[in-house]
Image (cartoon, rainbow, N blue to C red; front, side):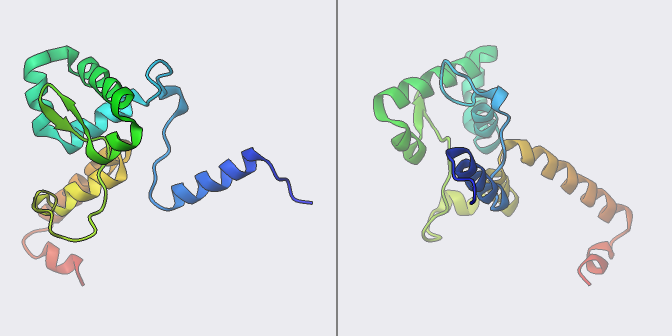
Length: 156
């Protein structure tokens, strides 16, 4: 008889999510006090919303992360996690997002204005984004070293 337990169920769900584009996060990074993965959230905001982050960093300096996390947690306490995921949260008058969802249509000019690479980075997560960027730099270097017809040869 097959083993039926919550642990087995969790394992199947995790395997499915990881096979379909989700990124595993180290459980040691879980901030029990805030009940979030603090560094993962901060990395996501830095990478997907660099302009907003830079403006906040100009105000708060080294304490930007703590300010953002404090505002995020207060916002979630007041508005709930689901509303925060859907609509973002306010931090010193700036709306920050902790998730981006695929649009049902292509009428979102802000999202459409982003390059294909930025859209991919938003979906792969902050940990894999660094690996992806490094690989892209490596490929760009190889293409530029091979001369002007390198791209043409690469697409054959």
